[in-house]
Image 1: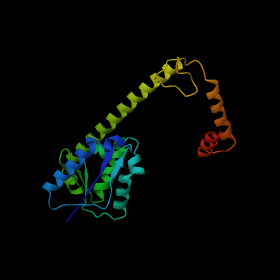
Image 2: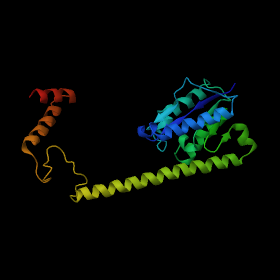
Image 3: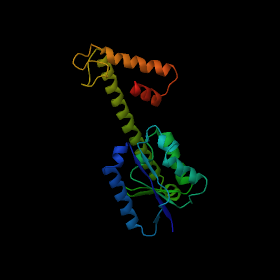
Image 4: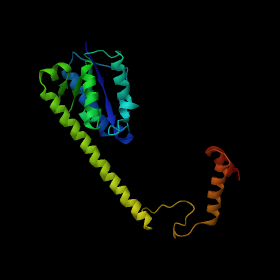
Length: 218
């Protein structure tokens, strides 16, 4: 009986506790219900929470990387299934990197299933219908472009915030504890002494815990 491995990735730890996790689990259950001849593996925890698919962290240090190495080492047999919600769960990297990972998986005999659209990609199916490969490339390009656009928007927003800070605009009501909250142009002398003491203790070679302990005792 073929074995299916469910891979789930979340952009943040918060998503792992929300609807994203529930939705991906539900898609896995629906797929297995309609494919009773496939058994779900329960030994591997293939979840990457808070790992970037845009930077490829999940493939280098995460569960996806573990899965790919197990496939490469022959510890996951050819003919096994990898279940993912969308292509963007596998990768949001540039097309050559994303495509290389995908082709390596199917070349090693793994059947990649994108649950949201019910598509199955295997070495046999792609060879028989090359249009499947074009379809996968389009999905990878879309996933990368979405992440690239988002990264540029976020970067631009942060640059604008930093420009405002440089102009003296206070972005939030919170200020460092040594600054007067009512008049942010004024420092609080007693608190400034504490800050200087912390820096001096650190320069003397003390670690964070030791500094905290010493300040509390004083």
